[in-house]
Image (cartoon, rainbow, N blue to C red; front, side, top):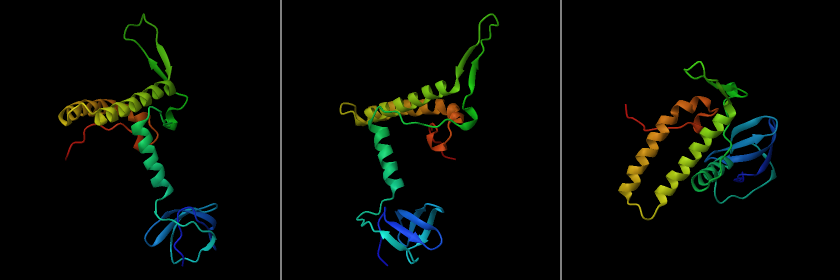
Length: 175
């Protein structure tokens, strides 16, 4: 059987039409229109609808992750981070200890957006420090420790995020 590249369109007798999204040593990950993503052996009888040659066996996911990493590290553009469903349309109420003062209500989405902007700006700051040509490596490490501690202080807000991969992470301790 021909070795197919990412993007090749195929037809399978059981799952129907699909597109190869990742090439493994002995198998393909194929996204089928009706059946979702399936991993099938290269030995499987696939009808080739359209073959794509591939020098590099990089999946769409790997390419997307690499691009997102580059954009996160080198731009001031904020990505859209989803808020956990349980918080959508929620309201944050700040009630002062002094009962003569009025409560302040803030939509959780507004607060969440500020947290995400803070995280994105910390990432940009971190990248600019690491690429700065006048700071010594020791200076960079010392400043980086403060940024890591800031991330640690912000882990309280991880409860707002929908996906674990978007969480703040502070210093890792070995157990």
